[in-house]
Length: 133
Image (cartoon, helix red, strand yellow):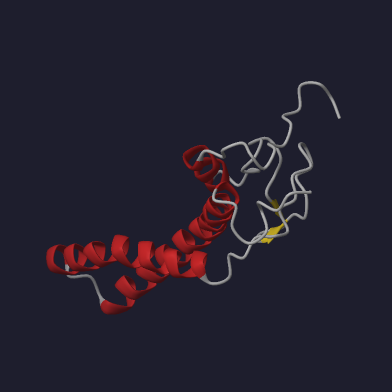
């Protein structure tokens, strides 16, 4: 391992939550912020390619999907209301535009929110992230 690569923290060291969340949202390793968090679209890598932090412990499960639905729904609900009351578009046009917007926003947010959840779990030493070696 090179000298500039960040060393994984020992179990006694505190892991700051905010940087881990931000790194996870950027789809980066919550430990070093350099290595990619995903292999493909949503598959979390077993180890960070840069700092070798083990990431296979994560248990994101359905959390990122629920958060994605919650955020997309809350963002598009006012758009639906304002768009319909002000512009009165044809129902098929409105349904098409909102469907495309919902799918695009969901595809954008889902991996970022999964990274956020993995970052929280890593920082809080949940699901095996804090076990001493």
